[in-house]
Image (cartoon, rainbow, N blue to C red):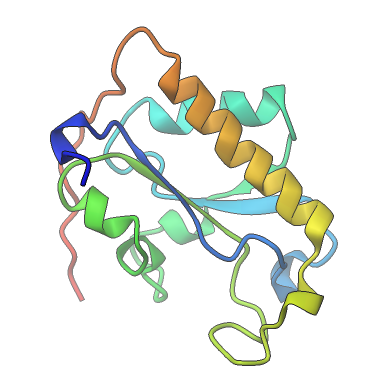
Length: 144
């Protein structure tokens, strides 16, 4: 529908309303992949975060040896494999991850709001830059 050549970045928000056992009670979000393809996106995201919601940005899942391989497993990767920089906001692996017990009553709506504001602020910064975001790093190989 929209040409990939005109796509500057992909901001993926998938599961941003809960927390995982490792971060219970923290004001955080996982930010996955923001420095994989662009030397600038991570900084843009961090600056947008500082100006708005000031969440703890957790980069745990950027580790190439992470067994979950989340960078390669969600919708954003279909952009990344074509050289389009991505940032994937994620709340982590909780006890209801991909289970029918992950119901709306378990969502922390104020937390979801903060994370959505960060996604918007990052998109706003990208959309209002004078120069297009650079994709200046090689596409990481999806090795299993």
